[in-house]
Length: 506
Image 1 (cartoon, rainbow, N blue to C red):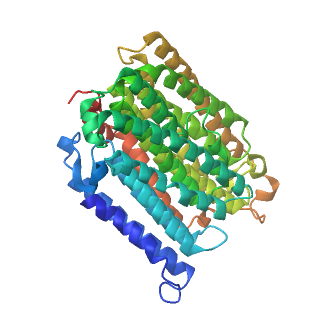
Image 2 (cartoon, rainbow, N blue to C red):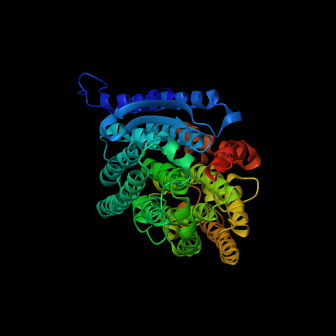
Image 3 (tube, one colour):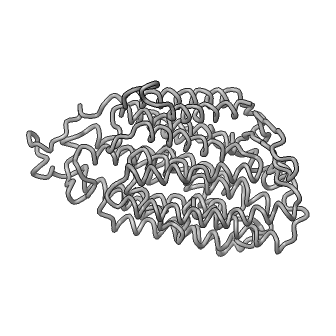
């Protein structure tokens, strides 16, 4: 029941935005405060769900509710969470609250606070529902709920190229959704069930090899668009670059995870034979994405666009971990999901702050010397960059290292030589990742300030310019990046048992 309440709160908050302003919350500031309060209440409920979770039985679905939805066709309203989904539930609630907190002092341009608040709350409902849904059709409904709100957020509050970016986002994701639905229905019709927990327990029993191979291909392509996997990633850079700061944070921090989570929660356990057929191809596209993303980052001149392409590379490591079909690799993928959400969410917050202060995200126009003109902002950017490049002791290290380890020892049914080659290429991608982040830091934080940014000039940005709301939005992400990096056991202990269950290990 806890997850029903958790989703009902933001849904009711969104519906409250339909009440005319003259009767409820007159003024944009009051609306933003209301949004922060509703998302804060949702976060508290999510934290209660974490506190009530039995960590000794993390492979068991907890907080379940299972009610008939449409009995004539076998649909059930079935919700629950295990060690795989719980961290993503908490991450979603946290990032949504931090976005609302950030907008209290830094609202996106073009106003329309009521519409933005309603859209972000509906977006939160869809994201949370995706991670707790245990019926295939219910999962698909929540998976689709996020598309329209994010489309409108980009279209209304985005940058100059927002219309093209929003259209590309919706077209790509709708195409992927069609393939995903076809794959799910193929499994459901042949298995005679829509219940994800029941289908996972069967591990593909009763489904022919050809059905599993076809279903995994269709579902995998649908999830790969959202992940995003090369070469289905081309909607991502534009969407990230044009979206407002809160849109970029939620897009990178949560929406991308819905694709990789779907591969682990739906595609792997429902069609394991199909997974073994397509795993080498998934691994190949993953490592191409790792190297391509790094090389694309080296060629970028816009800060947000560079961070967007970095997501292609980082999610490549997540996909490589999944492709190994081993507990080590899938654990790496789940760890990488959370780490990427924390670190890239922070990076997009900082990119938005830099653009607000300097009026541009162009690396050449920003010049160097930010450590002189804005030392606190530059220090936070440095922390986020070294965390994202995988410095040991920070969250970004463990997912990538374990993904490479999983590739060294893939599932026994996969070609080990091929995956060892993937490991080597992925290692090269990790080196290139360090290269583009160090290049970024050298370009804008070190060196002498540009003439217009010398102390005393109009463009100078004093360290005091960082507001309390920004510190409040960024500090939890910094603290969690350190916590998860220094004590990876906090996440790995939670995910190990349910991951083993995915492979029939109980």
